[in-house]
Length: 344
Image 1 (tube, rainbow, N blue to C red):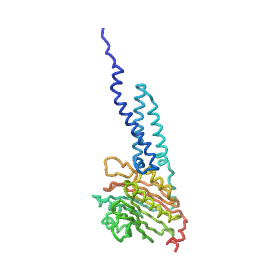
Image 2: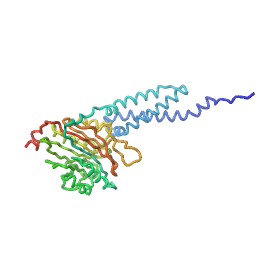
Image 3: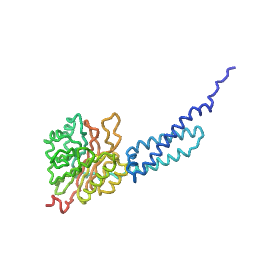
């Protein structure tokens, strides 16, 4: 008579899986700790740094919770810890990420509206293929474009298509934050603080244009790197201060904010300015890796008097950022502000 093979002893299976369960549990609690710490970012800037990586952290936490639940059910262990972390994941996602995804989109231009094409592009200071940027700008022929970390040679190479350019030092000396356009600005101002070339301070430029007797103001800005946060906070305060003096105008603010939309600092800036951010979870950096871009760092804000189609990204053209492209229109029949150069 054939003797049946002995089944694998359950205790042996538990002995083998116990280290795995401990590892998964440990990683789950570490991710949960980071999620809790991220919520202190509304008071402590250092904790807010975690929020830049919030979506992948939430996905990792969800995977670890699912693994821990499976192991708990299989070996009849307590399910309270993974269920508690699951509630934490849902709560943080609902507070920080879902509002960004579900945000109301801007009103699109009407079928009869005259539209204008706008782009914001951090072309990378050490771009090894600047000829690709020249080709991209020449082919698309935007009405207005904000270039960050712009090479003077690129700006000169496209001056046949974009005869007007102004940098953040009002062209008095070199500055890599530039607005180029097919239209002549009626006013232009550079408001860079400290050394705008070292990317450790605000590098911004403002231009105004008269379109159909309405004024359109465009601000291009490049903010400091995220660390140390005090410098970036200063940039946000300076930029918000400039915008507070331009209430009631047609405005586009675009730039590399070095901030993600689920950080408390960008959410605070959203509330501080009377503008609508139209870039919602539009991932733009890094664009020079094998993986798709992981962070949405490039943002466009518009005044509520403008209509805009959903923005989209373009080709990297050798940069580590994707350009962001927006088609917009002015509200028909709008009037310039009393002190506008377009009302003189």
